[in-house]
Image (cartoon, rainbow, N blue to C red; front, side, top):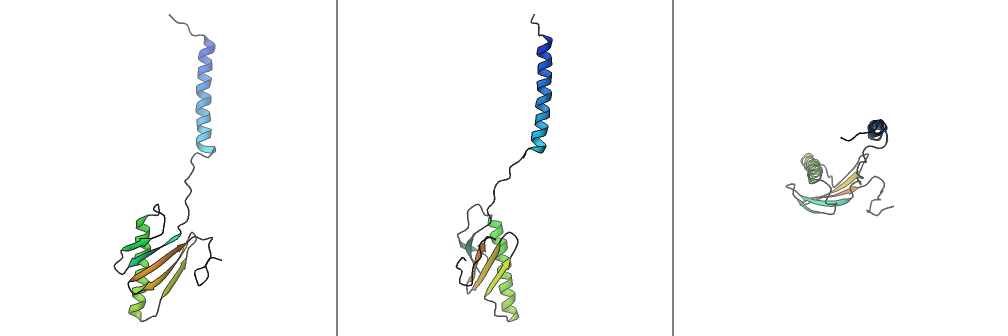
Length: 127
């Protein structure tokens, strides 16, 4: 028969309580979760009139659904402009997290996604 000294039981009890308390503190007060760094999108893609993406210089991690969504909306704007008889050849939209510029091409559109910190002049050269 093994005897456990009372000090050992007390030490284990306090260690467990301290561990539980520190787990609580760590979980809720000491940066419990580090969010992955997400870079704003930067690059270009070419979309045809049917909505198919031909080429892209965007990182592979950028979701394809986002490209399709942006491309469809840009094509819809250019199509509506043609139906209305407006000579819209370029579209520039600025959001808080990114901006994009789209150029209407005979076979679709060329869309540039630009991070918010980069400012471009009319020729596309970074300032």
